[in-house]
Image (tube, rainbow, N blue to C red; front, top):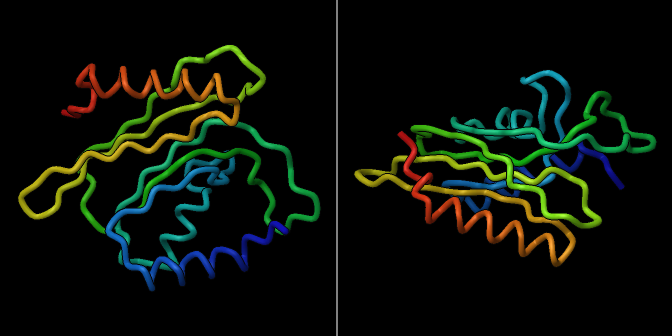
Length: 150
């Protein structure tokens, strides 16, 4: 089922046909090197998206019969046609429950014409109670004005 070499071409085709300015991704595979992740691979296929930001967060199990070696982690990322002025990542606090994966948010500040646009990408837990903790942490982040990236 997991065949990244075929899937990335289909994803790139879909992105080209829908032509969004910004795309946020979850469960993006990455390796140990900073320059080894699926966002960068997509960016090579769709060069109109000149800006990206990615943060790795968790180790994952190796996929059986995977062609691609070294993608032993995952994270979240953003591809953008709009210039990224600043970007950062923050870990969400752990809420006790069955999901032991680290959860984080990434925040990018973009410029579109004369306006600054803030985009926050998060990947909440699969556990309902932990999702509530993730949502509360996101709201704390937004209301604390941390979204004003200098």
